[in-house]
Amino acid sequence: MTLKLNVNGSEYVVESHPSTPLLYVLRNELGLNGAKYGCGLGQCGACTVQIDSRAVFSCLTPIVSLEGRRIRTIEGLGTTSSPSVLQTAFEVEQAAQCGYCIAGMIMRAQVLLDRNALPTEAELRKHMQPNLCRCGTHMRIIRAVRRALNMPPAFGDRERAP
Image 1 (spheres, rainbow, N blue to C red):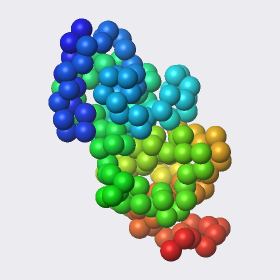
Image 2: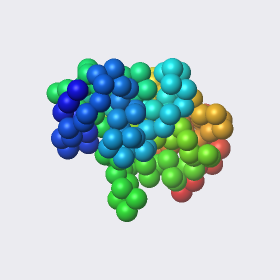
Image 3: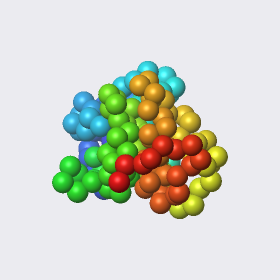
């Protein structure tokens, strides 16, 4: 089946079965490898992308449901030479260990930044909860999102990177 997808502001025509998960189309047809295959069950968040400003697991999202919708991947946020505020915060806070979950974490966090400039600590933690980091860098990830939001350090945060 031929479908038109809007990914990172560009139109793409893809030839895939309608039930093909978006993750496979992004990686195999469009060469956008930021979203990772983690579990294939929507339980880890490594494949998180934005669809119409919502955080979505791309491993569970069939492409047939995406025509006419706006898809944004980590590749659409910034570049190596010009990273987004959030990407810079993740770097400064050294939020990545192995890095496998980071694109999904950043995409989920970007939804929060776009939607709520002043979340509470509880809102931030609840929003980030669906995404997992197998290396256990959750505290650095939370600090990075707080930094991008210009939130003060939480009680118990160690000294933050400059």
